[in-house]
Structures are given as C-alpha cells and as structure tokens.
Length: 162
Image (cartoon, rainbow, N blue to C red; front, side):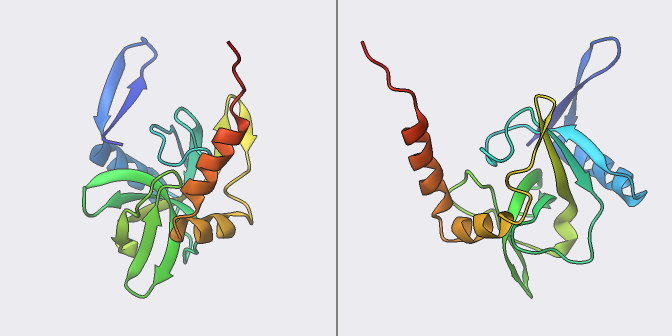
C-alpha cells in the first residue's frame, strides 16, 4: 500500500502517501479510538479483499501468531496489513496470506494496531480473525496456505463448456 485515496464531500479524490496514512492511523489509535479504512491490494486474499472495510484497534499488550496487524514494513517503509505467523524474542515474522514469502522479521515498534473487523459489501467477514487464525498462521509459515488457496480456487472455478 503506497498511497491511500480518499474522497471528500465534494467528490474530489485525494491521495495520501502510505507513510503519512500510517502516521494518521497512529495518531487516531493513540487516542484509543478504532481506525477504519478501505483495504487495497490482494496480499490478504481471500480473508481480506481489495475494497473491504477494515477496522484497526490500538495495540494489545502482546501479539500472537494469527493476529492480523497494521504495520510499517521496516524494509520498504510502507504501510501494510498482514498476519503474524511467528513470534520470537527478536520480533514478529509477518506475511500476507496470499504471498509466497514473508515480509521479514519486524520489531514490535513497527506495529501500529490489530485488525479486529472486516466488512465486505455491508456484511461482517469473520473467517480469518477467529480461532482459525492460528491454523492459518501455521499453514502460512510452512508456505502451505498459498498452495491450499490455489487448489481451492481451481476446484471452485466454474466449468466452462464451448
């Protein structure tokens, strides 16, 4: 996510660079107020899709594998929303559910907040944030999640006949 686009009441579009958007999110969350915005990209598909409304809440005391977090990637200096797949004393290994490789080991200071709600077309999406998040993180860490998702997509594709 390099730039976030928003529309004002006059219907004019404006872009906010991702790092500035991260600062805005941090400022709101520091006041202990949840932050809601529209997701962009496909790195968390199918659990979070492009255009879903996601709500980020202030930092909990600790994070666990499976938590979906908003963070500034220290390697690319970009705001991202991905899943923690492993916790170690050195930091958090974070990865997009639809990505084949992790983002890297991120320090706790790079994490802004935790995703607590996903809304798609007016309906809350529960899959990916409940107890199943632990299994998703485990599968993702072993690079099996993207394979399973690919297999699932090929099975559910409609059969086209000429």
